[in-house]
Length: 527
Image (cartoon, rainbow, N blue to C red; front, side, top):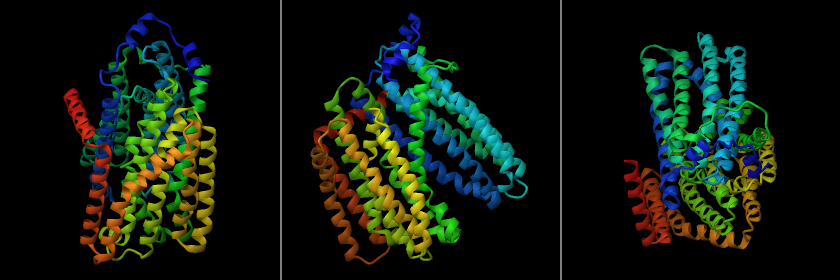
């Protein structure tokens, strides 16, 4: 069902049309993109700071057993987060495809999306309650009841959080990532504050679950209020009646959820497989090396996350040349950033491991880190291609690839971990995700009629050439200096600094000054 079908199910109340047709924001185009990307990076930084600050605090206050119990509950909440993001990607796409004056269709779409997510919230509540009762034995002694209460509370919060995510996805579709990120920031900050307040008052695991659930509800409410501020008539209550529009949203949503789930399984389940076969102690080097993955991904994913609504809008308007140009540029940027970041960590893997984990880290940790960093370059470079495929509605091929990737990774990990030890899990990821994810690039090129030679020349080739001087300098420093912290800091500092200089030269002084002016405009408008 396409966007024309969405329009057929719109409510044509002229008062709604007038309210929704009001311009959302005077800033559009490059300034809007800069604002979205900047706030996305800021949100990622805020989350990182929160994790770094709260993790040791929770560990000390809850103790080892209590921290383990809370980690189980937080894993359940993470699964729900994957559900809310995966299902609502289709909402973001459809909203972006609608014209700015198509108010009745927008309201119908928002109501249908909220209805779908309310149903998902009800399912989440049931599953969480069942898990809280049946899996309470996994909690630490004395924490069984708290685990059950916490699971039910977190599940109940999904009745508000998931419909609220539909409003957040609408903001993203309107290319107001800054407002979406504001709501997410409120969630992060309120959870941090609530955590300290609850634990200082002796609330324990159950109180911590209440604080977390409250932060989820606050974020959802903020998205609703922000959407009302931007497009007053678009804020529709959940539509519970069955309709082709709801079926369309659900169909797109479960496919994107499947894709994200398979990517998650392929790239994040290796530690569990290694622990199950070789034991938790043997899996520790893999778990430690995996922590660095998030750091590398945080440099690429914030700017690629804003691509979906842009692609959907350009595709719907027939602006194919702009779409192709943006696809090539974003691929080159993703390659340069991931190659410099992951390449630097791979080149100085031994220094990174000894400095971070200490001399007692197993020697295999170095090899695992090198393999995983190679994987990051191979899977982060095609991220823009995946967004392009989603934006133009080409889901079948990417869904099949994701399923094959997830299943093959688990199967190969079992075989290689049993044969080679924990390094086998990293090699399995390289042999599956590292080979299958890059296939999204030629698929996306075909979907938008982009010549593969152009992508190789202007995207891949230009990105590799831009990184070559920095990588060469890092290799030279590694060969000339003795291992240690000095070599690590000097190598990464010189390499990444040279990479940044090359990137600035690619942009050019005129564009850099223009970006500076846009940044000041964004800051002034925010103030």
